Image (cartoon, rainbow, N blue to C red; front, side, top):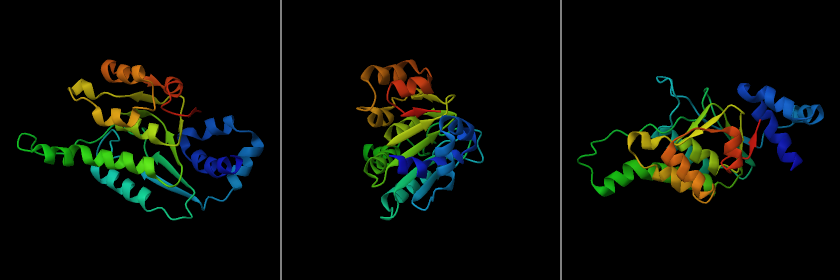
Amino acid sequence: DAALIKRVLPEVAAHDDLKKRIEALCSADIYAMARSASDKNVRKARIDEIKEATIAKITEEMGAQLVALLGNLSSECKLVLLRSNGEDFCTGRQSPQFDRSKATAVQFREIVAEGPLRLYRALRECRAPIVGVLQGKVHGVGCAIAALCDLAVAADDASFLIPEMDAGIPPTLVMSALAGRVPYHTLTDMVYLREELSAADARRFGIISRVV
């Protein structure tokens, strides 16, 4: 849809890491039209980099804020643009801190599982299309978020990884988001072998829709 592209491109192009690649991808005419297009119907949702850390992991608070944003879009919002504010889109999830030895099964599910499941549900049920702009590391829950976007545009040097088994943790939550979106053997390969996929491979296997 040309009108959608004209609304999306100015916002995507504003992301420094992808600007030159998007300019090269688009014809001069389309890019010029995109630059002058109105962005009033584009809403930006940003998962910010954790300032105290050297890697950008999504926290429970970030997830809750994103769920609230996606669940309360006005009828005027035609598009949600989801991107990070750091070098990496998302390097995983910051594990919630609690005494696992004393938690009941119900408490464990509420603390560990309910947050990501609510986020995945909000991404699936969002009334407006979601465009993900991905760069750097797209790891763990980052892979899940990318796959759940309606459109996912990645830099050609982005990397995709599900590393949870390195810590002996079955990534069942991430798998629940990817199941049905990527081939079974791609998913099991990512889970068991824990090797990074290139952006080109991520597109080939259906995790993302475009590489720039």
